[in-house]
Length: 436
Image (cartoon, rainbow, N blue to C red):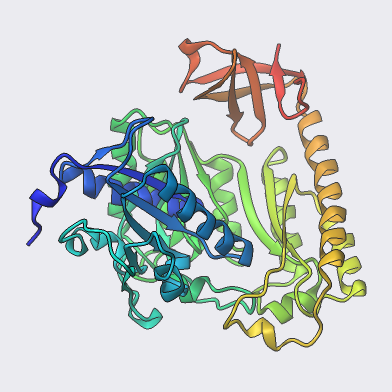
């Protein structure tokens, strides 16, 4: 039984680190508290409750979480401090020992937060309520807005892949999902709230259907029929799961944008094998070629990790040549970070941090060249731009269907609308194209 008096006249502040999936989940937790009468804290106010949703994808992410906890505690002295998310699940006792923390909730508990808030008294040591990985099995639909124009819809959680470098399956459990009917209902709610764009998020979204006997292609077909949504974007999807069938559908769909984010991780087959990835460079190349054949102007973003154990100089150069030769639009480059409990630690050859930095720079230079070529190829073309609420000075920004960032003089009349315009030159910061 929830004691609503605990929440009377209380305010809360929410902080999210890491992926868009975390943002969606923080939003759903905030909704639970608001339903009990907890008001979002206003600028300049001191919150009664602080919730921090953490990330643990790298050692640096862990460090940033610890720093955030201490910084937020200083901003809201005396607040009841709740920490959840991947770092909280993987290292709960470490988090609980941080002086400011009162409650640590694991992945299975965070969406049942109300039952753990019997009082909001500060603790000498944080209480830890988590489950073992094998006991993480629930799925809670979540959808959030990033305060611009797009919403992030959680369609899937967990992962069954267990790549050698990754802790996410231990932090989030096995692959599971909501039903297509639930996802469609969430999209219809976005329409009612005036949303125009939805990004499908999850840990391994192409694996959608494990819980319900449905498929990812059936999901996107159903969402495509929701009237009122201008665009959907598919967030990161594995190369083996962005099938030809999915690509063909996006190419002819009413609302799915020609924008793909596909994790490559390495352009060397030997390194991919060490990572226990479920594809090789041949399959990845086929996916890129198929997308470009069906949608020549599609934006393709690619994740790459440098400096993993086993990545020799020769294998990195092989990977770099492969990446330079494929028709993608931008790279997201990450330096390998050793994570406790992962199988990668058994691989003998490790890479010096200075070498990781040099390799990262080499790939970022390739990325910059590809990104600039992609943008420049669209100068003079007419595109549809969805302008965002966010404003910087007298400028507003938006994105084309194929994810070209566009800058224009601020005009409130076109915010959150699809605006057809011709793209002109680069802006002063060389970060976006402008309108004619």
